[in-house]
Length: 594
Image 1 (cartoon, rainbow, N blue to C red):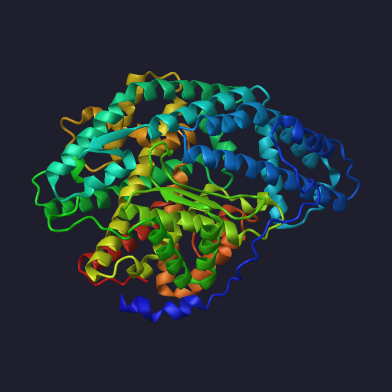
Image 2 (image 1 turned 90 degrees about the vertical axis):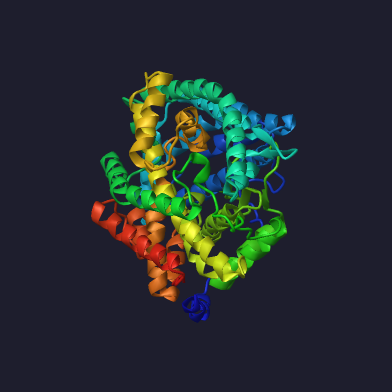
């Protein structure tokens, strides 16, 4: 840890100016414009569609005007979604969000397609030479090819069902110790050194989840049917292939996804098994059970990095500022604006996110903090997304700012690791600091096989759209056992294993948006490796890559960050070996965390 202190001043020498944060003046929409119904926005979409374009300068002006309109729309729906997830039990807020989904979005989609066609058909688009426009036009052509009018109502219906999933999850609570707990709040008891406490809470959590297991199975079957029909409408054999294109995965193939699965199984699944075995020994157990996986050894209380959400924010600002002054300023701006909602509470949707707000240019962070160590990591993660939003803020078009997930998650996961050398802000006890750093690295080892499990499961689901619930359950268990440690004994918890996938909200709400976490995690480890070798240069390359937004291809952005975009077994083995070395250093309490 002394090595970390030696580099603090060097890291701060990287200069990224804090932008002046203010709402940009409108040049197309009236300053007081508000959209409460489709008719409010319709004239602007019609004008853009009918406007003649006679030069490349007029095309650029048209694109800026379209960008202004779409920025407003995006921010309008962002607040509807944010407010809904903050309180899913408020019927008025829910109605306002669903009004957009049901009444406004279906009207916008055809115009979006018309405007995309207008752009691609315009002869002056060939004169847009900047690399960012090439990426934008590539994406636009893809969206035109995939657009189908008949998929609009199916999309609306699938989004409604995804929100039904969020409401089911948000309503899940248990009673323990005379207190009602959300699933997130209950999770901290699973770290208790007292095995009796862990088992009692775990049993309550599983019993509560199983109450809705059948309901969620039926809901998901409806989603699979809807999604398959959308794929068929667009001319695809299955939703997997359709979604691959829809996600704009231009820079790698489905075959490479399977290569990722296999590489993770070869290199990280055995490492995860080793970590479980080490934990079993520390806990003094003959066999590990599902409720033991997150446990702390006797004599060690669960890590408590912060007192309340205000403390979490203040410490987060301090850590980001120690990496680079501007990064701390970004979080301070969000705090001052009230754009951080961190506490878990009943009725709040599960999960966490960073939501970019396209018009004002300041993101919003949503979390479910309940006093756990992982809350601190989530703050670092979502803070990485926020920094990405700020660094790309100056790009002229929002399409240049919104990166694919392989890049956006690289921003967030790298920040988890880059911040580790500053975690003494959260843990002034050196032993607790080492525990926290060790837990973070172990969680990465644990996450990669899980990501491969979820992604391989989704590949099976959508390439077998006629499957039954029983077949789906059987396939889940098969894939789960392929990647997860054999040393955890699930006897008596078979039903919990079978329905374990239902807790992964991505499967219900954003299908196939998950392997990006694994790809980005490998990239983040490579970013951290560079940072450890040279903190100043490593941080500078990382931040410069984020400033590109989506004006370059994914491999080019990774190259700017100083890393490779590679799923091959040799590359992943190199990353796994590096991570194993760092784990061994921490296990011997001789960390070299920078």
